[in-house]
Length: 153
Image (tube, rainbow, N blue to C red; front, top):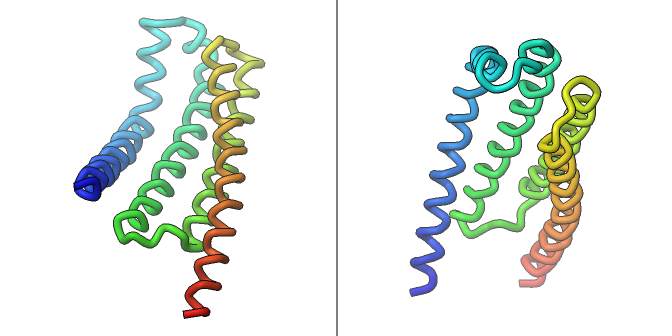
């Protein structure tokens, strides 16, 4: 009974990640238009800082898509019931690096358009970056144990 609910959660998560990935691509393609709208209707400073904002948000969007893509790859190993593989270690390491890049990009944003949300994003992705690196170490150990166990049998 529990396995069935886990299966539904895994399927939902996979579908949600796919939605986020493809929706993210659409948003990234429409980013110049969306920033223009935000500048016109939300905050004129966005219009004044259009090119720096486009760079920071665009580069962060590419990094975000990279994270979601890696999560989708990892979900495939969850569906296959084979999570502790070196590919997941690599995915976690990449997600950690990309999260830290997002933090750096938003640190740059402080110099031309500081907001409270900027500080929240910096802290969130800094923590996510560190957490991903630590989790990659945990997965690396699990892979090592699994490989040792497979050799024993």
